[in-house]
Length: 397
Image (cartoon, rainbow, N blue to C red):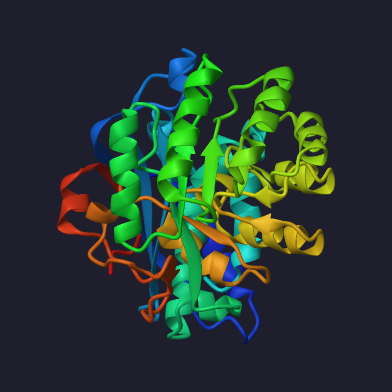
C-alpha cells in the first residue's frame, strides 16, 4: 500500500470510529480491473461518417469489486467507447482509498466524497464516470445485503420492461443485413427496433428508414438515432420528413448540449425527441429536463456517475412528466427502468454478454427482471481473460 493509500485508510478509519451505533459494517477491501472487450467487427455511426470519430472496435470497462468486514460483496462497472478508458481507470485508482473504512450503506454521502476528491478536474465528465463503478457496486451490495433484486430494493413498478434493439442497425451495416437483423430481433422477442441515421446525404437515411418501416409494418415501434450530427436547419427539415413513418422517437438530432435547439425541435414536431445519453452529470440532465428539451430522457448510469445521480434524474424527469429510455448497459438499467413510474424503454445490446456468467430473459417484447439479488451478474472467465490491469486496496479477504 502506498503512503497516500495508507494515509487515506487511517483517516477514514478514524472517521468511522466516530460513527454512531447505526454503523455496523465497514468497507474493508476493493479491487479495480481494467478490461477491454473486443467487438466482432468495426462499428460506425454518424460520428464516423462525418469524420469526427473512428470506427468502434473495442470498449474499455472499469470494474469495481467491494467487500465489507461482514463479508458482503458488490460489483459495478463503468465503460468508455473509443478513448478515455485508461484515464478513467487512473482516476478511479486515485480516489479508491477514500472508501476504505467507510459504511457501505452511506451511498449518497460516499458519492459526494468521491466527487469532491476529484473536483479540481470538474464535477462531470471523466471525474464522475470514474465514480460510477464504486457507486454501482455499493448499490449492488446493498441489494444483496437485503437479498433483493435491485429493482425490488428501489421499489419496482413492474417486473419487465419493453425492450428495443440497437446493435443491428448501425450505418456500417448494409441495408439488406439491417433488414435481416430486424427479422432476427423480432424472432428473438424484441419489442422495438432502432436504426442509425445522420449520414451526410439524408436521402440515404430516408431510404433506410422507409425500408425498415415497410419490413416492420405499421404499429411496430421504430426509432432512429442521428448521434448529434445534424444542425438545426437540417434537423427541422428532415425530422418533418420522417413524421409519416410514425417513429417512437428521433434520438440526438442535435448536439447534446444544444438544449435550446432540442426544446424548439421538440415543441414543433409530433414525433417525440429523445436525448441525454452523452450527458455526464445530474446538473446537465436537470438543464435538459427543466427546459423540456426532450420527450424521452436517456441517462446512462455509468456516464452520470452511477445509480445515485441516476435516481435524481429519474425523480426530476418523473416530476416533469417525461418518459425514460436509459442508454446502453441493460444489465444495470433494467433494474432502474423497472423502478420508473411511467412505462419506460430499455436498450438491448448483446455486446456485453460474454463478460458475464448470467443472461437476461427477453420474451414478448420485454426484458424481465431476474430474481437474483443485487444486479444479478458475476464476471465470466472471458472477462478475466480480457483484463489488462488490476489494483487492490485495503485488506485482502
